[in-house]
Length: 86
Length: 266
Figure 1 (spheres, rainbow over the protein chains, first blue to last red):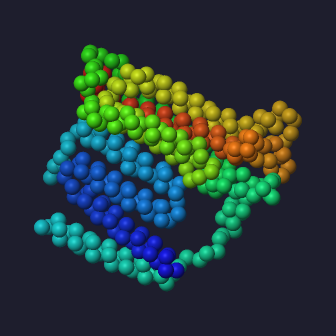
Figure 2 (figure 1 turned 45 degrees about the vertical axis):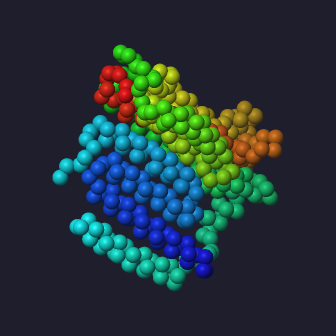
Figure 3 (figure 1 turned 60 degrees about the vertical axis):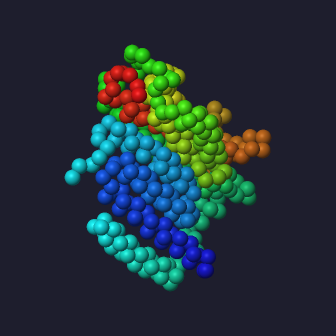
C-alpha cells in the first residue's frame, strides 16, 4: 500500500513533467528545440509505461519516439526552415 | 514574463489534477483479482502440465501477439509493408540512388569525433536490438521492438556520415525491399509451417498453429537441444525483426534522398 502510493506519486510527477515538456514544445519557436522537448516528453511517457508494468511498450516506444521520430523530424526541418514564423 | 505566467498556470492546474489523482488512487485502488480471459492466458502461457494448451513461452505478451492473436499481428505487418510500398510508389522518380559528381567520404558529414563514436556504438546498438528481438519469447521485447532499435543505426549513419554513405556501402532501397520481402515471406511461411507438416505426415493441423492442440497433435518443437524457442515464436520474431529494420531503412532512404535528385550528399 505504502509502496504503491510512492509509485503513484512518481507517476503523477512524471506526467506533470511530460505536460511541461509538451507545453515547451508547443510554444518553442526554434523547431529543433521543439523536437528535443517532444523527445523529452516521450522519455517521460516511457517511464510512465514502465511504472504501469508494460515493459514491451517501453522497448518499442523508446527507439521509435526518442530515436526515429526526432531523427525524421530533424531531417524534415532541415529541408524547410528552422524558425517558426508568427 | 507572459510565458512564465502561462507555465505557472498550467503547472498549478496539473498539480491540482495530480493531487486529486493520487488521492483517488489511495482510495480507489484497482482490485487484485484477474479477469477470466487474463487468467487463461497467464495460466497457459507456460505450463508443462497442460501440454495441449500451452505456448511454452514465459513472455505472455509475445505469446498473445504471435500465438493467441497471431493473425492480428500478421495483418499489422502487412499494413506496414503496404504503407512502405505506397511510400516507394509516391517517391518514385523523386530520388536517385546513383552517385553523381564527386562524393568524398572524408570531407562530408560531421566531425571525426562524432564519426568515431558512431562507429563504436553502432555494433552495440545492433547487438542490443538483436538481443531484444531474438529473446522476445523469453523477456519483454519482440521482433518489432528489436527491428525498431536496429533501424536507428541507418538513420544515425545517414545523419552523421552522409546520405550517400549507406548507398556507397550497398544499402540501397531495392536491397532493403528484398530483405523486407524475405522477412514477410518468412512470416507467411512460418504461419503455415505446422499446417504443411500436418499435410506431409497426414495429420490434422491448423494454420497459425504453434504447439500441439487437442485434436491436432502436430506442433513445432518448444526447444532445440534445451534452448527454449517456443515453436513458431522465435522464427516470427526473427523475420519480423528483419522486416521492420529493413522497412524503416527504406523509409529513411526515401525521406533523405527525395527531392535531391542525386545532386550529391551532405
